[in-house]
Length: 252
Image 1 (cartoon, rainbow, N blue to C red):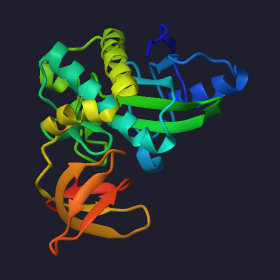
Image 2 (tube, rainbow, N blue to C red):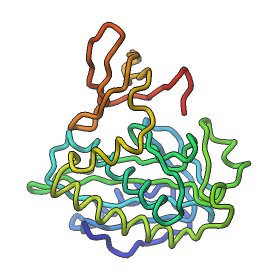
Image 3 (cartoon, rainbow, N blue to C red):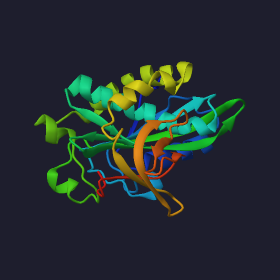
């Protein structure tokens, strides 16, 4: 996976939507195309949630991924992306970045980054995916209070303003290495690293599923397709691919 130089916009509705528009205009748009915005007016998170970012202070970008992996392996692309970003934050800023299934990067149990992976069609044997990333870089404490879940920023934990464009370069550098490994060796080669950064394994959780049902039990593992493996109090095991994880009756 090699990235092209990022194309920056001062304002966009959404970097994912802009990349979707470009794919319509240019059917041969190369994999590794990166769209970044200094301000976003209609950013989205998973489940059509709104993603808030502060214009000029935070990082929102999307990239085009082409892979021969089956569509049902796409959730592990989200996990691999999150792992790579967590490693970049730890390696470059010495921050204790952790992971929460399925798409959050945390600092001290507060969300600093979210990932939205969307299927974007198939060409020949390859599948296209648009991966959107929102990272709270220099968001103020007042701005994080506007978010409906506990959130934080890199500036809050480093104590200084962080260069947004340099942060993108560092993240893309890490993603090139991680996603190459994901494509060539599969998520299984990254799974141990992902689990080592997740504090929820072995804990009691509830998964609120998209169909409105909830299942509670012990979070035991991650499956080969990126699903949560959970065992309820009666000993019944479940593999769940989509849902919101609730820990100790509180979202984190």
